[in-house]
Length: 288
Image 1 (cartoon, rainbow, N blue to C red):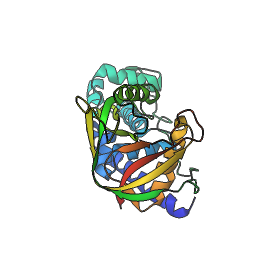
Image 2 (cartoon, one colour):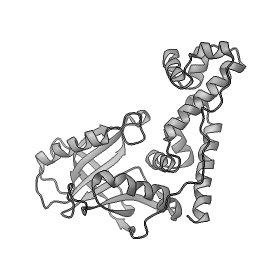
Image 3 (spheres, rainbow, N blue to C red):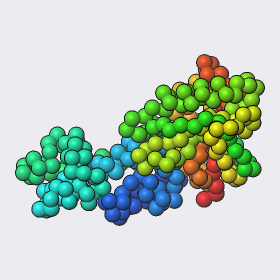
Image 4 (cartoon, one colour):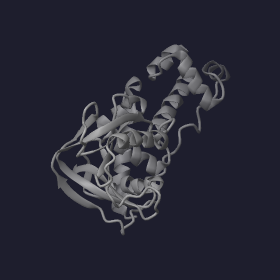
C-alpha cells in the first residue's frame, strides 16, 4: 500500500481520536463524532472497523469505561455522578457495562484500588488492505431519482446485534409480492434511520418503476456524483468488496462520501445462487 494512503488514513484516525479526547463525555457518540469531522456515520463506521477490526462504537464504549475506571480510583465522586457524566442512562446500566469488561462492580473496583490498564486497545495503523485493481470503479453523474418500495429497520455489521442477513431478505420478499416483474431493475438503499443513535439503519427494497406505489415507502436520491462499485460473486461475499472500497479505494481517491445512502442495483445479471452473479453498488461521493 502506498505511503500516501497511509498518511491520509492516519490523518483521518488522528482527527477521530482528537475529537474523542476533546468532546464532552455526555456528548460522545458515533453520530456526534461523525458530525464533528464531516463524515457520514456509515462511512466512518465502515472505514474504522475495516482498518482496526473493531467498531467505532465499541472503541468509544471502552474509552468511556477506561475513563470511568480512572475516575473511580482517583476521585471521590459518586458512582451515579460518574455514570451520568459519561453518558450512561442509569447507574445499573453503567454497572452492567463496567462489570462485563472489568469482571468486578464499580464499587469493588474502587475499594480494591485497581488500575485501568489494558482495556482500551492500541490502534495499529499498519494494516494490510488493498483495492483489487481488476475491479474498475466508475464515477458517474446522475440526476435526482426516487426509489419506491418496502422499507424496514435492521442492525448493520459492526453493531452489537447485527441482523442484516435475517431482516433484509424479508424486506425483499415483501416487495417482490407487490412487484414481481422479472425484467425490472430493482434497487435496495441503505440509509440512516430515525433511530441511528441506537445503531439502527433503514433498508428500502424497491425500484424506480413501481406500478402500485400506494402505501409504499419513497426514498429520494439527490443529484450528484456516484462511485459505481461492481460486485461479482455471492451476495454473502459483498462485505469483502465493500471493505476494500471503504478501507482502500475511498481513502486513496480524491473523493469523500456525499450524504448517507448506499444503493444496490440488481438487473438481469444478478443471480443470488450463482458465484458469477453481478450487481452494482452506487455510493454518493463528492470531491474533497
